[in-house]
Image 1 (cartoon, rainbow, N blue to C red):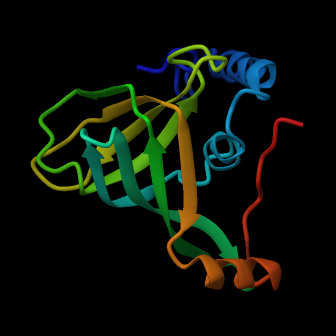
Image 2 (cartoon, rainbow, N blue to C red; image 1 turned 135 degrees about the vertical axis):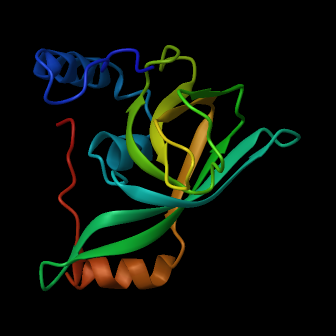
Length: 177
């Protein structure tokens, strides 16, 4: 389902796919929203559980609450931080399932690819790979969005900011610099 990153680690050729994907992002980074790069390029949400998501057709908004399990506290332990993601002015929504999915609300976010569905000069895009966690569902499914803008905020914004500024939690952000 990914446009560039078709092979997953540790298959041969994965490094080439990742390098091509990174080159693509570097080429178009001025058109991509900074939060997309910050949270999705570096894999901040990898293995995060989806608490809820909703597609509001009337307002063309796709929203989800996603736990980010990849922040470390000062003791080196991983902690969950819940984020609300709001994709606005959605012009394309696609759900591709390999198997029957009993509940989209009980899923784990695996990885994503940004800026490859349409030209980043025109719109933003993301393809998300998820796996269901409730039986009898198995396999993987993909959600693909084309949208105009995105907001990514911690549910407890003030507490998150204070913890991050004090160094009590941190994440090793990847950048395209």
